[in-house]
Amino acid sequence: MKGVAFVFVLLVSFALHRRGSAIHKHFFGRGNFPVGYFAGGEYKLDCSTLASHLESPAAEKLRFCEDATLWDVLDSKGDIEDRLLIATCDSGRKQWNTVMGPLINPEPHGTLWLYAPNEARLGPKSRSTSSIPVEVRGKPRQITFSSYPPRHDFHPLGVAIWPSHGGNSSNLYIVNHARQKSVIEHFRLDPHKPTEANYVRTITSPLFIAPNSLTLTSPNSFYVTNDHLMTRRLPFVGNLLSGTETIFALPLGSLLHVNMYPDQLLQGPSPSTHISDTNIVKAFIPFANGVALSPSGNEVAVASTPGEVFIYTRNLTTNALKQKERIKMPFAPDNLHYEAPKEGQKARLIVAGHPDVIGLVKVAANLTGASAQSWVMAASRLDESDRSEPTGFTVRPTGWKLETLFQSEGLEDKGGFGTSTTGLVDPDTGTLYVPGLYAEGGIMLCRSNSDRSN
Ligand SMILES: *[C@@H]1O[C@H](CO)[C@@H](O)[C@H](O)[C@H]1NC(C)=O
Ligand SMILES: *[C@@H]1O[C@H](CO)[C@@H](O)[C@H](O)[C@H]1NC(C)=O
Ligand SMILES: *[C@@H]1O[C@H](CO)[C@@H](O)[C@H](O)[C@H]1NC(C)=O
Image 1 (cartoon, rainbow, N blue to C red):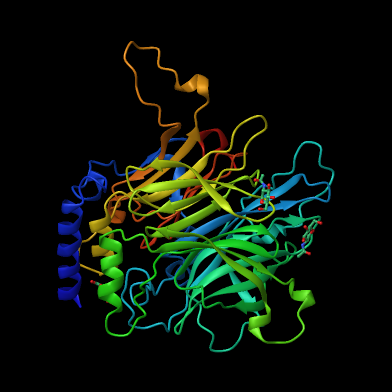
Image 2 (tube, rainbow, N blue to C red; image 1 turned 120 degrees about the vertical axis):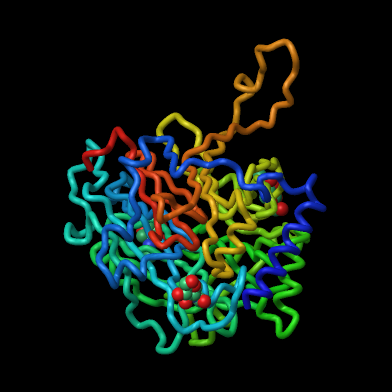
């Protein structure tokens, strides 16, 4: 196994050298990163992992986390009561990773987590109390499942949830890289009992080739990326073909839009009746990874892991997309999320990823002493006025400003945090959450220095 991994690393290095112009130089040759940097405060003082809030053996389950999302719990008038973190983790990832390999043992299952900050976010005008019970706050809690089919695998990747309104339950969707094929699980989560998700159904489609990340367009519809066309699941040649597709950044990823029948209207138990229609809205995206819908609903962002983020304008009626912009990233972007905008401000796009892909491949192959760096950035669109350069010579405007929110050398035994896959910012508190694909600490939580008391 290690030999195979090593050859793979060599191949990657070679291919990246050959494609040096297309793929950013940060991919190989590790830059100098600090142990940890957090833009909103002081890394040493303000950042700690969620696993460090738990005792063994629960702490060992909260590791190797991929995606996370913020769950808005709104009152009946639509004002925010609470904003909670929901995250997917898989402590068995080194034995079962359908994207990077290996595919050895799907048996230990992944987990779903909830983190509710100590204080609710009740606005000054709110007269209600939050639906979220006090006893779940302040510590990460594993979300258990009710009515989940027996012997049904759970290897979660992308997660998305619809906000709760006036205490009603939210539809929750999770990409599941199960043993036979990848599917999407539909659950419902009740804010009064947020540590137990009710299983609704399993959604399958022949077009779910390698589903990775999803974003909801309604409680019953979503965009989902397929990261590859040639997957590691293919018998005998899977590793080679999937590796080739990754290394040469072949444009074989895609983006689907899926409309489902609301489950209340389902006639029979047949899964094929769950989906009303599926459209391939974009094909030929190299390694399509994270996808996010903007708060306005007019824009969709897709991370293409070889080094770019594509911005599309969305037709709200048909969900068709038209490419508008591309943002070149100084790392391999993984998941991305729009920050809920504060009043009068534009929504920032928070992009997390891997500045050291070779390091990540070594970590995935479990090589002794391997580590991989973390980098999270916020991208904001520049106005025309921001773009004009006061200096004499012209600088070609890129249209987007990139700011670093978080960085780490990735050495956990030295207090760092590696393999960042996602970045989420709670705009009301400035809290930053960063899951790490192979981080023993699971998820990094950094409180803004203006919010140290909470
Ligand atoms: C990874 O390596 C560690 C120690 O080097 C070992 O304990 C563990 O079993 C390995 N995991 C896998 C999946 O090979
Ligand atoms: C909860 O209420 C909101 C607003 O009325 C609605 O959009 C949503 O579909 C409801 N969710 C469920 C699961 O019924
Ligand atoms: C969305 O698509 C429909 C159907 O093609 C078209 O009639 C409509 O003009 C489009 N809307 C926008 C804003 O482009």
